[in-house]
Image (tube, rainbow, N blue to C red; front, side, top):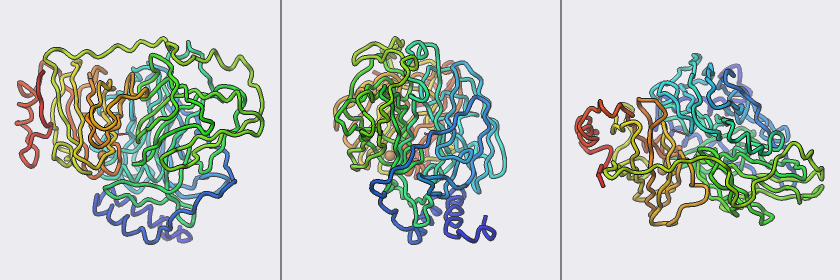
Length: 507
Ligand code: C2O
Ligand code: CU
């Protein structure tokens, strides 16, 4: 980059600044802030002109992946600079059967270190794309793991030390769909009636390039992108659609509704299908969360429209416009009704009488239990194959979407704040939304067969980069360093001599 790209100096400078975040951390984040003066506020969407929704390309278990800057069509042929996986925003959607060995050769074509984290996938530490395992520019790494979990939609995104937020904001993200026999038996709507929707906000500058000015408090863009398309439109036949929704924003929460007042038929979330299909009118979702919904488009006639709307911002995210065509009935099976069992087996995690309960306070915008993230600090050990209760609370500056690597969890309760659990919080989750004044308790068991280092963090990516993250170890229950997690904590004190894991108690 640089001299030979002189025609777009602003772009290159910004992407270089973005690259500098990896090396310079928060100082460079400050630099991005300083660069804001040359970034115009994004133009409001052009009313009435809609762009065809981009459908990410398919990828399979051995598809090569490259991250690099490039031009992408943000809708209607308006090209903008962004950071792309395989030249696209979002990157390709991996579709992989359960049991498959995934072997993805990844090349870093950025000017800064990066990693690929497979969010929601339960993989060995070496394939988890943690900040510790940065891939330097111009080098490659083979991500290898066996998919050993039920059907569902996970995703992948960068996770480099101090630069996750900027790299995601500039465009790096993609979907990862697992198939299995249980799901196949339901004969749910399939391509072209199964559509992944990666929903996020963004800023674009005057030249139409993605821009980013995140601060520790977060980032809120002024336009919506659905699958990288602004003012997106999808032409729909008169049938049911299955939308695989991922909230891929850095900070922004979305409250999804349909302009027709119709419900979504919710059938799945982060960890796959729910036990029961359930109709919901609105879903408040935070960065990293996924939902799997069926939407009835049988009543949308030719030229008629229904909008997918975010009631928080008032934005239309996606316009569904009817073609009037009746689809071939063979392409879609029976649609599960509201309340129908989906024939999936979700065993309830049961806490033993002496369950280990760990409390994590999400403090301010930069700390968990008083501590800023330190790559080298292991905050606690978790014995594998053991149910524990983890309690998340905050002393302010929420929302904090809490995400855990290495296992899915079950949400047990929410007290304070919204005081209830929502339909999309049933089943298996890997990210749960914590609002101010809320205490959320989950049960978790690391039973994926992997021992090693994993992460917990706030998935407001600016909070994560600013330090709201910790490392823990999943260990052989018979070989823990200390007699109890608390003993381990003493062995590895945090920089302030505080117990990094907070307060461990037994019932
Ligand atoms: Cu989606 Cu640790 O991140
Ligand atoms: Cu947070």
